[in-house]
Length: 188
Image (tube, rainbow, N blue to C red; front, side):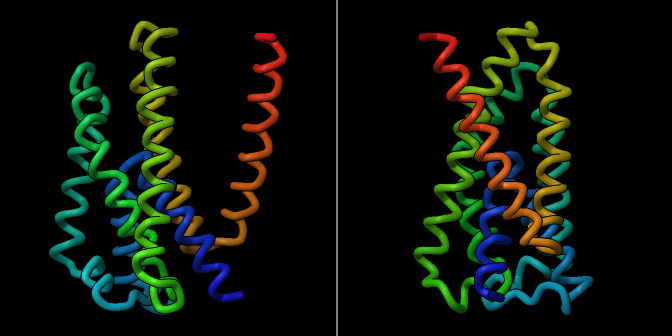
């Protein structure tokens, strides 16, 4: 059961990395540093809890968050993050508690890469262009704020209550499938 919870946690963290690369890494690092009984990272991932790395991650969170709110810069940021977010998702997945000791590191890294990359692609290739087209760009800042808040919430829930995160993920997938089926019927 413990490994299953670790896998739920890992998937949640890597999914949130698809929205903001550094938020889940910062959340994991802060929790591992200040609450080591809650989250114990295996080597070499325990470096994420190093105070200097936490300061660096905090600065990167600020930079990415601000860049995502500035028109035109947000498109450049998304292009750069196409490489960074999947890598951050891979690290977040692999660093998750007790997963790296039970799952081969290459599999863990690949899963994190695919999940974060998938979320990033949906965000940057479907959601953001639709928001820009329908709102003339005015909706990008509120959507970006919502993405950041979601990334923080998903990251914290993934570490603290991974079973709740798994339930929410199943509900989200069902709602998404219903939405796609309704949309398909409307276009037919």
